[in-house]
Length: 515
Image 1 (spheres, rainbow, N blue to C red):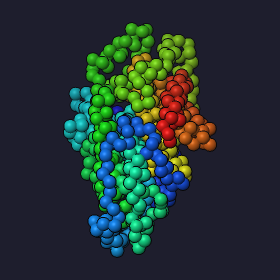
Image 2 (cartoon, rainbow, N blue to C red):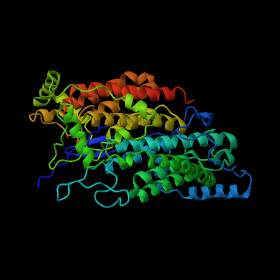
Image 3 (cartoon, one colour):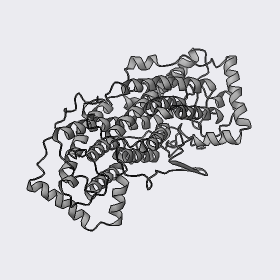
Image 4 (cartoon, rainbow, N blue to C red):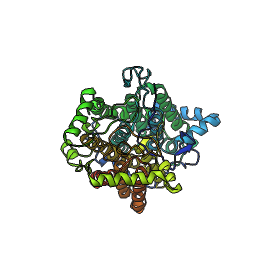
């Protein structure tokens, strides 16, 4: 029996991914990132508009003990005990985590996505197994972190971190407990000092929110996730940044806020996105009834389309009616001259590709074991945010805006793909041999283009001096799918426009959230 292994649609990050031959290795930039030293601590961020929280006080945080009582002095002593004989490993942990909590947990999430971005092989009977959250370590391991799944994971975790930090900032300003190094000047201070109150700890808030959702989304990796939480908290103690009660209050708050997002995730319809044989057949039948050639899997044996009901998942930035209204008009008819011309254009690209086009194809290809198109844009954003010296709460806000836009882009894109069920260029012309993997789902519209249009739009708003550069990146990512023989021009151009329309909803939120 012939086995094929088709690469899912994705991106390759310039900053953080490395292609070596046929393998792709995720590489996070770690050693040369300076410690986070915010230019503005955003002390009033407790008034910013959260995503799911009704108010920043929805989850009460008890008043901290005074810094003069014996219990607090004992907590200061704990820090001094840690600092008495620091090992090189402990110093490494401090340096690593001091780069920023939101940054580091986003990197960890990207690692998990890459690890799980593996489509399963077929069963002996020619069917394909489906990963099960109830038995995540059995083959195929849960999840298959394909682009829609990854977009959803990035969005939930980023949005939960943002809401939790808005709440944390409210309580920081309310209680105004100073950092331990301001209480006891004999402490070593291994991170930049700040006037931001330390209770509850922003780092523990981020870790608590991230870990709670990661354990839902990547249930087979709970030990690894908890290990990172403990490392993160230990690094803050060693650095003299937080006492134990700062960390405990922060982690609890992060977990409580995350549970609101867990409840939403359990009911957002993503669990039913796989569909069944009846649905898959109906999509094909409906396309034929419209007089069109339907998309057919080019794998052997034929693999079911990837998450054909993902278009029904609950969006973050707008309601379901708006999501449907963002679906573009139809692609060129499969029997039209325009479709013949577009197919011929793609054949021309792949039959004699230029070195530059090959470079672009592979630069943006990002196949299996990488962290998908949304992860690529997260990496781009992170690289640019580092130089901005944002506070943790602003980091979280900006990542939430970016990732909610890309999750909603995935929803509208997958709705469009499975509404029209349009064939790929290599299906209409078998002489077209793609220069990278062939995604196992319909062609119209391009996922790369939709993700990129959304990401470039919101990033251009957040960092306006780079708006032109982001737009150019999005266009190149879109073109790479044509150069690689994967998409028609209409897929890419319409996908960019749809993505930009979705990105503008994130921009609207950004102008009204108080940030």
